[in-house]
Image (cartoon, rainbow, N blue to C red; front, side):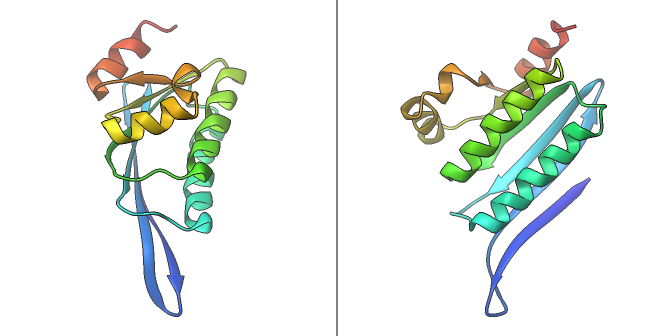
Length: 133
C-alpha cells in the first residue's frame, strides 16, 4: 500500500510524506519518504497510518525504514515512542533502519537511542526479527 500525505496552505502543497507499506514474510515494512519539515497535521496522518498497521492485529514485527528521511520533528519522535510502546504491549517488536548520522544524533540527544531498536539495513532488521518468536 502506498499513501501520500500532503499539507495544503492556500491551495498549494507545502509539504508531503510518502508512506509505502509492504509485507515480507511475517514482517511489515514501512518505507517513509520525508524531505522537509512537515506540518503537524501531515505528521499526525502518518502516525494514524502507522497505528492502523499495528491495529490490524496482524503486525507483530515492524520495520520502519528511514532511508528517504532527511528531517525528523519532535512530533514524529512522539509518534515513534507511542508506536514502540504499543508494539511492546501486544508482544511485538519495532526496528528502525537506515538512520542517517544527523537523525541518529537527534535520537541520541533525546535518549531515544536507548529506548528504540535500530538496524543499519532492512536485511539486518529482518534477521533480528527472525530471532524473535
